[in-house]
Every structure is written in structure tokens, then in C-alpha cells.
Length: 118
Image (cartoon, rainbow, N blue to C red; front, side):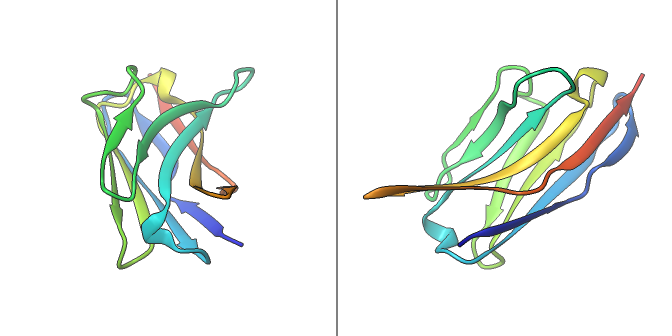
């Protein structure tokens, strides 16, 4: 069983920055694909960014050039550096751990609120 704990959310003005962190326990972190997703009120959860065990990254078009995902396998942690924040980035941000071998292992954190004021 993998447990994920996010931190770093908060209230920031438009144009500001935040850094989200996700600490993972259990499982084999270095083999998992880690990701950040977000869900705004009244909307479906959407992909923000993912990073594979090899360090390959993928971003939603809406955050490319502003957000950076990274991981530290020694610390079992994944990060999301968010710059040039916009009000439309306001959402609950969730950390995800995904590993598929014979079966799918898919885990979520409890989420952290990010609010960007205009």
C-alpha cells in the first residue's frame, strides 16, 4: 500500500509562485510514474504533469512553460514548481502514484488547495 501526502498549497496572487511537495511511503517509489492532477470546483479532475521512473515528463498544454515537475528518488518525493500562476490554476491538486505490472497499482493523495487571486 502506497501513501501519498501533499503539502505546499496556499493562497497566492496572480503571477506568483508555489512549490508543491508529495511524500510517498510504501511501494517501490523509484519504479513508479508520479503525477500531479487538479480538480477545480464543478470540473473533472485533469492531468497537470507526470514524470516517469526514467525522468521523462509530460505536461498539460495549459501549464507548459510555467510548471515543472521533478522527483527525488532518494527522498521518495515528487515536486511541482508552479510559476506565473493564474486564477484559472485555482484547484485542489492531487499527487498520484501509478505502477502497472500484472495489475495496476494506482494511488492518490488527499489533495492540497491552491488558490490564485486576481
